[in-house]
Length: 143
Ligand SMILES: [Zn+2]
Image 1 (cartoon, helix red, strand yellow):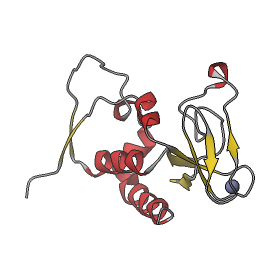
Image 2 (cartoon, protein in one colour):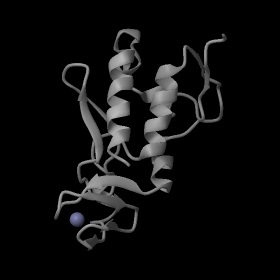
Image 3 (tube, protein in one colour):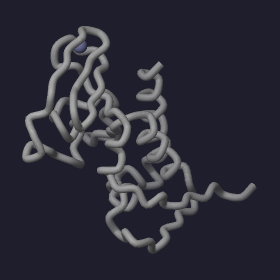
Image 4 (cartoon, rainbow, N blue to C red):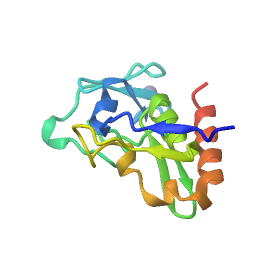
């Protein structure tokens, strides 16, 4: 069987915010969702608007607009944190880690795409099984 191929979809982390980001609700600790406009929680009916563009933070295990802890995050591989904004992000990381052959095409956004910026510990062959186990565990919290 051929090794699975992975084609870099040329996505930047900012593009992931097109879908609601899952966070831990600051009021009830349930699963809330964040968009650039608001944080909403179905569990406790909390609704908040973000502090503003100057507050934004990317590439951390918090949502970029409110800096609330992400719902999808877990300790992994000895002191690292595996995190994802939502199921799609988790799927993207999984596909990349599973793929033996990684294709990076020099598109018009070279070097800065999401998968190009995944940390080395996450993509190291020796961590593959643990990373995939952690992803499966996180995915189970979405059902
Ligand atoms: Zn809540």
